[in-house]
Amino acid sequence: MKTVTVVGASLAGLYAARELRAQGYDGRLVIIGAEPHFPYDRPPLSKDFLANKDFLANKDFLANTDLAADSDFSANKDLAANADEAAAAPLGGAAPGGANAGGAAPGGATRGGAIPGGPTPGGVTRGRPLPGQAPLDETTPDEAPLALTDPDEIAELAADWLLGVHATALDPRGRAVHLDDGRTVVTDGVVVATGASARRLPGPRLAGVHTLRTLDDARALRAELTRGPRGVVVIGGGFIGAETASTCAALGHDVTVVEAAPLPLIPQLGPEMAAFCADLHRHGGVRLLTGTGVAGLRHAAVGGTTGPERVTAVELTDGRLLPADVVVVGIGATPNSGWLTDGALADRDGVRCDGGCVTSLPQVVAVGDVARVGGVRAEHWTSATEQPRVAVRNLLAAHTVETFSALPYFWSDQYGSRIQFAGHRPADATVRIAEGSPDSGSFLALYEQAGQVRAALAVNRPRPFMKVRRRLRAQRSAEPDGTRSARAAP
Amino acid sequence: MIPVCRIEDLPAGESVRLDTTPPVAVFNADGALYAVDDTCTHQDASLSEGWLEGCLVECPLHAATFDLRTGEPMCLPARRAVRTHRVSVVDGTVHVHLTEPTAVPVSVRTPATTTASAAVTSGPLATKGSAA
Image (cartoon, rainbow over all chains, first blue to last red):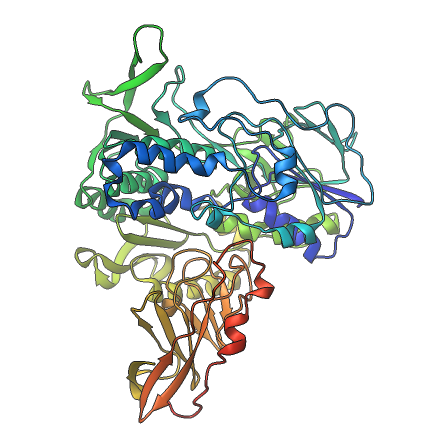
């Protein structure tokens, strides 16, 4: 292969690029990112980043709204100091709620035509960032920890980074990836790592309504949360919703979580542990309303009839009306596979892959949130870091020589509790508290089926959890086909 | 020099966390004592809760692994070294000699290969055979 294109400058995309070089691929490497940022880590966005821990050092921040607004946005106004980014990155005004502001800054990228290959890779070009989409600023203490890579590694990878552009189509016959700025990348191999997008509520876009998936989402939400105490309604009690609610409560806001199911997190954790997590909300001072859906959002024009429409309340299906200054929609994510118009490659539930992350085309593999590997699409950070090694190996071998069978693992930090989960939870598993107790806030729970431990959940109990996780991993690798049991997982 | 515990209270394979600022983790790796900053350089997790194997410790959150002798990360997602601190045993009591914080502010822009300054000045003092 002379050119491999990684579509998605994401966690999974970066790990794929690393694997390509680590596994000896020395051809041209192109990395396409829809966001203007170099790869960054998303998990902190709902936690430390949203809480803006450095900022919290000033305890009066909620009272001092001017200071809040200034400090928050000074980060966005300063472009990353390194010249290669600054040269190509026009900066939109980082206005509060920038994601809703219209208009686009002039782009710096060359348009039209095929992107030339050539002997001097390692360049960065950026498309047109929307206002508020300043590149990840690694010079600030809050954004620096998000960066997944650094200039040294970027130099070592020797890739062409095309940031702020979307892939719009894959043409397998022409061996080309088409971009939304009209350009085309001619390529021999493709790693699809386009991730997923936060699901939104139907209806018009309203000020005050947020999702939390991207850095720009988090910047915009944080800006609202630093403007004084707010009434926050979080729609969806999943991990994103719970972590966001926890952070909002810690910041001093009045928080309500609305969950349509009888308890949050039942599909992931089962009813017993879901009940424990529901209690975390209540002990954390957050109202949890379950078993009711959202009928719609009420809104009003800000500053008279001509101003932008802003959310005022959340209307529930049971008729209740929850006044809201800020609404966070955490109702899951949909895989970004729509650009793969070839129905054989992808559908609405992601890119179809065999157990080795390989699609029906051997020169196209998929990793991370967008990939349905052996029938399972797992939106887990750990999968995004573990699949690329297997996917790249199979891509370079031109057929599936290895399947992906890592043990699922995820974690969540909420209300001061660290929750860790590993394994596959059969629906009929029984839960046994093996250590500690839920009342004490520190315990290890084992999910057992037919006398065998299938999964484990720990709350503030990392050491014994690690032992069980290793045991589960060893047990899994001893199974004849790890991917088969993965299909049975929720 | 900070007293940690009696040597018999830190048997092989065990670790202890000091509530210093920043916190420090002290390990007994098969008889050799090592001390490093407790917080993983990737994200907020306590290395003293990690998995100890030889002189490597694996972070309990994302499995980044550090070499306790140098503080260097052995694999992703960590890219920066943890600071190492000297350990001594005086009259059966384990002590940690904290390494001065590096003058250069910690930044992800610092490549992992050049953050070993702490390791150069502070190789942990092995006390082989002193554990029960």
